[in-house]
Length: 364
Image 1 (tube, one colour):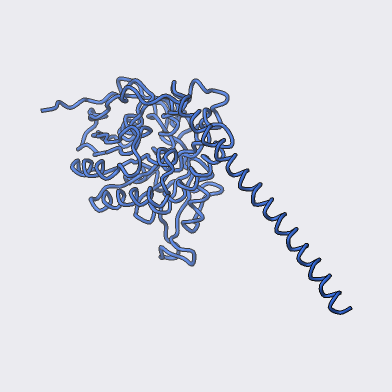
Image 2 (cartoon, rainbow, N blue to C red):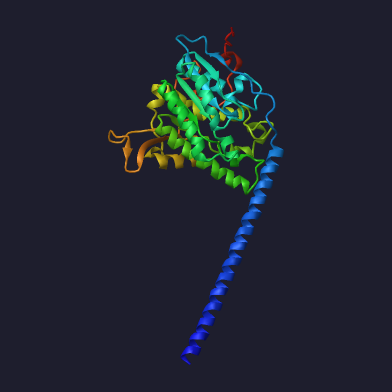
């Protein structure tokens, strides 16, 4: 009886094990089929997005020149590097490009001329930054503004690879004495031609890259501003105003909104006393750099820079960083408006032709 019972138990045990194995196999098979189906759906959505979003055609307007030539003093040397968002693809006038908007804002606020050189290339990945940096260094820049990352997401460049090129660029520019402001990867999940579930993945990938960029740039001595979904919340209500004809790149007004977020940080990096002493607002303050990077990636328009706590740059969780959500500024106080008043900080708009147009330098 003992042997018979043992045999029966062994048989039941074997059958139970086989059933568990069969269920597990079915589960694994279902998961594999789901993954394959999802991959096919994502590939199909990516192809559809490529068909809907047209390829780049005419290059963006050139904007090299001196802005605010009427102001006294030597010009501030400013360079713009990165991809199509830095070049201003999607607009048709020089004064509407982000470089021109930034140069105009800096010139007006500091009362100094600004010499702008743009080295950004439409379609550039982070791997395309080295030649841009080499060319920019020949200008002896005081300020370098870098907008990069969107193409790395669409091309699925590993974040570690993309960040390595970016941090090398920041280090070289800082070593040459330039202040560096980086607009981190925008949230591609805000682009309407990209549909769910690809949109959800695009948002996740964008935020992951933006957070990694923030940590690396601040460690290298630069400043970052999270662009995130800066245009996303208003797109549904004003799609024709904030995005260009291709529904992928910003329109003139879209670029103005992005520049309004970048300008206060650029001014602070250049040493504007009013910007560097601006008080913190609710929700701002000092965090560990990784925590600050994650928070900035979730909240567009957040500036992150290195900070000290108790005279030390590092704490238990690594480098200290300061979060600041600066008040967007664009324009120039009128004669009857005191600096710092609400009226002196109008909503971001493209500068007028007379005040913002550059004096184009003659080429030899």
